[in-house]
Image (tube, rainbow, N blue to C red):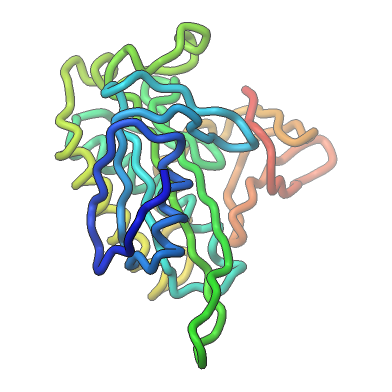
Length: 249
């Protein structure tokens, strides 16, 4: 589905079933959609996750949103928006659903040690208008499992949903509002103050620090998040920075 017209200002574009909210958000960006535009869908037929994975969902059982951003950040700082989104989702789950959420590097959101939400950050350079510098267009994809139907049977041991974690259903619109408010709050801090406040908050919510992990071919104890967002692992050969991979352990 390709939007037929541009969006004049920040808005929530509500759709039923789409291949990918990320794709719709980038189409809207090309059509001139404003910073902060949100694409919300009941179902995705080709949802995308990190590292080329698919994101599976059942209609109406998840919060599936993509937020278009035109951030005022240097390109090297753009990856911090992934940490911003993870912090925002964790805080929103606590506020709107009573779920005590934790964060797993780089950007999974956990409840009771199982994944309840995921983040996908994608950035493209926008074609500048005459006389303006090139700028990045970033889309932050957020998927939150709300009901048991959102968790594929094959992932039931490693994933959970809001109903299970909180013992009650969450209002999707209320959760979305809490996510967007937290996202804007932490994004503003990143743009004004740099990555350090985000880094500190992420560490305060982190799951697994001080525990043995294996990630990106590195084994040791996860001890920190450095100033560039890399996971710091203290292993037999000393401390190493891991910039990509999946944490095991």
